[in-house]
Image (tube, rainbow, N blue to C red; front, side, top):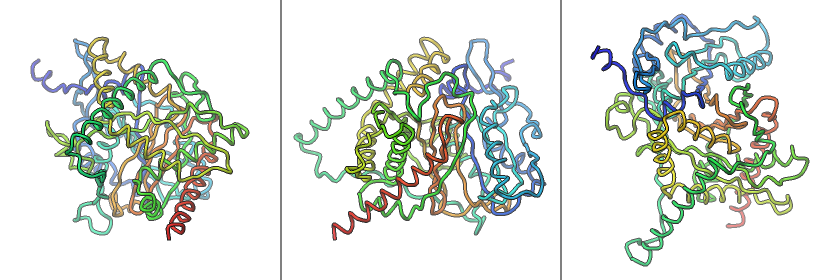
Length: 470
């Protein structure tokens, strides 16, 4: 009996929240291959490479006699986890585009069975406009966040040019404050007071938005109950990292600031169009996900699962409530201001300690009232906001999966009680932005076109600013 109990690993608090009556979240990772998929080696690859990555891929979630959720290792029936759908044969890539979109939409409504390990792999062997074949990883969010799951996928992948060399990632430069010497009391004391004020203000504001205050109903927020059970429509777009870096250098901001500003501007333009010219939706909040690990570069799975790892496996992130800048009259519109406002808001909120206080508050709720009530708090936080934005860093080199070069990749989140979720991932010299929206409520293609237009507006304005400086 003791041996069986020892085998039951406790589920992390966040893992319990994400697999509860209130929340059931899954992460979808999509790999686009350059060559047609050969599925003959799928089962051996999954058995010998994927499963050993982490014990959670071979475990189910159970509730013990104390009401606590635990992971129990089981024998995995691989054929129950690998799907190879059948589409009509010998059709055009455009035909398969529609079939693929419908397949993803249906996949968004299906929850992973709790009676088996919480992951699936889907192999799409038909060519779309983007790829010769597509590999879909659907993994429950209780197993880990995007950082953990990206690390897991990378354990299955090699460099396409030389498999013996490791994949490398863009260096994440720390934000450097160049305001001068901070050792004088005249500069230190105001910073401490500012930190305290921002922390208290952000923490109280977060509690209000998570409980009492909700965003206005708008073209990106239906406010309906049960959105998480409805189909999602996906649309992805690609941006040049070279062009983003040009804007970054011109404005003195980060890559995240540039793309977040583009998303904010594009979303506001879409809202104005769908509101028949009105832009009176000032109460519109985005939840920007923040990785709370000490180090953001990917470590090996062996390093992640160590007891005191600096970048541990699991769910380690927090929400930043970011108000979308309002859209002014088109004659006064300066696209660059959306980037600068995104930078100012996110930089200020990152520098406060509110995200840690909020996490501590949820933990206190869990201890006093249980994980289901804590999960309801997180559900309410998501439901009251208009959208969520999350991003990951991908490798610089082209990847290969079992000798299938990967042309592109993106990810999405299913089960989120919001009408709009936007995900961002870098890969080689591109940034892939994916819009996941409530099907039938948000026109994803139109929203995509407005985000692309917003980026071009910002790029053009940044070029004009360079000319003015010269």
